[in-house]
Length: 403
Image (cartoon, rainbow, N blue to C red; front, side, top):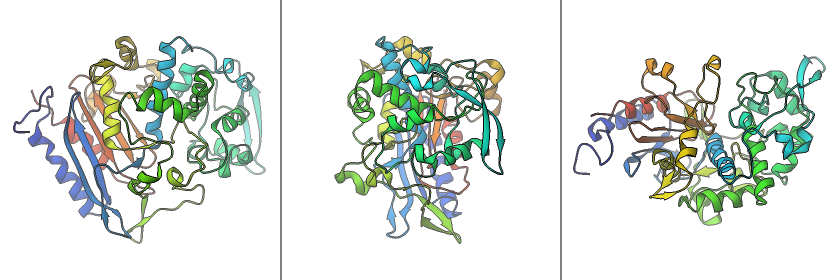
């Protein structure tokens, strides 16, 4: 770059070099096999690097253009798809979901659960689920195999014939559509009344189906036409084309202290390259690169613009940064991202008030600070391990801000 502070950024390149130390130290201590990281401002990539070995069988190293399963980072893209339809007047944020999917007209709430025989009772909900509640995880819906309640998990599993094997709705290589699974989801009881509290849920998958209904396009087509092509996201897919399959990073885990390729008996980990190309999960289905997601995030630091051209309006962009939850919930959740609140600043290392962030099941995460204008992404692809490199990376980037 030739200068200590890049154009239009408060980030110090010298301070960003701390990233090298923390990632390499974690690799040396066998906490992670490697990672790909990217730091940029609203205009350009400042720091981008790949570390470590991505395939222990071949000793192939990570590359900055590797493709990763981004799982729940799909949610923000689905959310923006919903907001684009809202801008066009095709949906309302407080529309009830049964307006689009009539099967959600008579929703029920779990009342009691018998773990011995897996029987349960329900009561009729007094409220209806809205699009805003699905965006903000306040609908009361659960999340199948990762739900916080063992009873809801068991109900998903019990009803797996209505969905797919073992009740897993996200990572699918079966010959089933998202519409079929969501229609059946309406019969699964809620945790609580809609709007009552925050419960991480499968609501964005429901909204993926709403996008299909309202737009008249399959979700992959809608994303390609309305988001990926305008934002030049050329490496983001539900299912990778043949010529890009070799760029998909394997998922790793540890066995006897050694890194091994992860397998799961609940679902096919290789769904992006071995799927039926029919199921599109709005909550966790995409694979992408750090560069593509960086392009997506620049929109929100540029008042809704991408390379000077409006992608969403400035007012819509401002709305995205508004916390949608009551203060009593103690969380910052917007219409597309998690949001850093004033109360969170005392902890440090998270960015300025309003910083947006999220992560994914396979160990990918991002953050974008609208005040100091920087973006950070760290992609790993691991399961069943514990490491804090993502938190340390975020702290290293936020403490690289200088004036």
